Image (cartoon, rainbow, N blue to C red):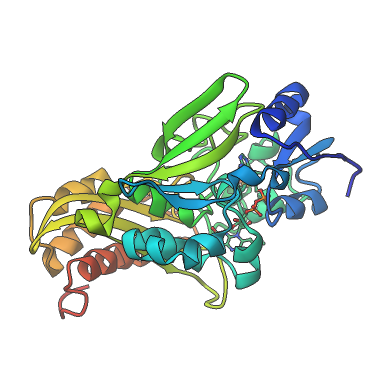
Length: 337
Ligand SMILES: Cc1cc2nc3c(=O)[nH]c(=O)nc-3n(C[C@@H](O)[C@@H](O)[C@H](O)COP(=O)(O)OP(=O)(O)OC[C@H]3O[C@@H](n4cnc5c(N)ncnc54)[C@H](O)[C@@H]3O)c2cc1C
Ligand code: SF4
């Protein structure tokens, strides 16, 4: 590992000032679960690390009086997953946090770090492969093994977005608060991520000096407001692993009829992949087996698998159906897959 300076700011303002002043040569550090791996592998080579953990005011999970959920960037995944009220009001968010890695990772990993973690593509993580994303001239998925890569929205890089929390928060219509030299920004989390064809070197809209300070989930997505939410994830290794595919759904139901829906897929695209076509398919209808199957087909209709990841299409299709049927209370109904 290369030598670097380690700075411990006491406030958000001090952190963003240092980061902005040093530009690309400085990186924010939260729990370090992701970043330390990048440092050890020589993928990230910062001259300065700015330790956000010293900014205690960013460590919170709290509710406003109207039921809005606020997650500080330094809240741990354990704090989110184990909050009784988050589990009750925003089940998809708690389930997603609970599904991340192992207890050790959840105890240390933070909300901000989870949302800003870098891709897991094994060529990106390998110091031996100077791929397109790292300034080289080839995406190795075209030559090598593409089994964990994108089936939707890929090109010229085929990374998949790794965070479990992000699809769940987007299904719940969350917003992200960003602090930086230009002041405070309040952005729909859905607009926080960018496709490789828009920006190849990074995965978010964050500019130099900007950090995530908070995530805000509106009360309309809560159980108390009549919205039911769920996160389902399929992983290769059941003990702890990233998603091969995941689905987060939030449905506002009127009896058996779905009034409004948000459906987001994880592990299949370079960004959390919202399917408005699937949402339209179920809105205004009773969700039964044929409707769920139709919505799942709509969600995957643009899928374009690489040589080794065709299995993700039926996998994600099944997860969309499972999420919709479970939320509609028809999870165990027999019917065509
Ligand atoms: C074995 C293993 C299994 C894992 N399994 C899963 C899984 O199942 N699901 C999943 O979602 N993740 C998984 N992860 C990824 C794990 O790193 C994240 O879940 C964790 O939450 C990262 O948080 P952190 O606080 O440690 O981030 P850090 O490592 O400190 O930071 C991650 C990145 O975000 C940046 N950053 C951190 N905080 C901020 C901020 N506030 N604003 C702007 N940028 C910031 C850092 O500069 C860095 O680039 C796994 C990781 C490992 C090693
Ligand atoms: S998918 Fe992206 S990160 Fe992976 S090899 Fe291709 S360009 Fe590099």
